[in-house]
Image 1 (cartoon, one colour):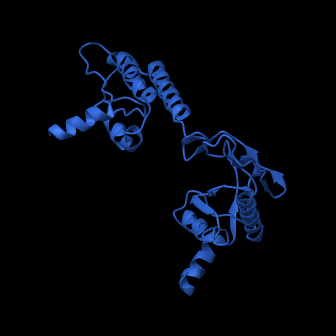
Image 2 (cartoon, rainbow, N blue to C red; image 1 turned 30 degrees about the horizontal axis):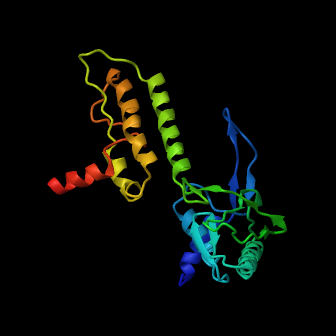
Image 3 (cartoon, rainbow, N blue to C red; image 1 turned 180 degrees about the vertical axis):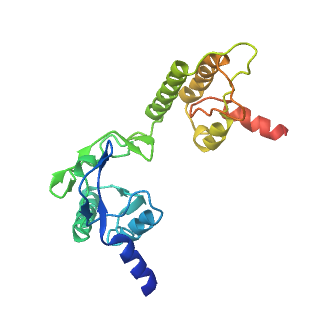
Length: 251
């Protein structure tokens, strides 16, 4: 990696002879040696972790995508031989983890087939001798992905999240008089950020927008607006993608 001796010594000092203890109600436990891992919350920790796992996909022929400690291995399966090759790559990943003193949590590892074939190739995959459960939906980086690439479940999850936020605000914000400013909901930024997804959204998603907009706005006319404070609900509110495009063209 081209790291100098001085940097290696500094990293060694950063990771060596570390201890941790637990404090409860002012009482501290006896310190315990930390013999593995990197300090949580440090700037250097994620960099060292990424350097540690950087070569995880070098020995496999299937595609590998990493995001922090999330690993996705994928392959086009046209016949049984492709399934055997994917299984071989899974075995290589499992052996890589053992060689470097790590392990995959098999209870959190799943298999999902994305296809429109009426008779897809069925193959039982294993990791470290444990059968991987086949699922129809996975949550990856906060997005629900289904085997038929339908956005319905993810849309419902976003709507439910917006409803929970509205419920918390309605229960905890105090009402104000007419002389006080009203609270404004700032959501246009969320709409623009999600334009790549919204442009291909099904009608069910677009139909949910005005309904959620009304639900979000109606209860907040009773609440106080704090100076220079905006509330941005991560919801499905705002104008439709077409309206945004027309507005941009007129400017």
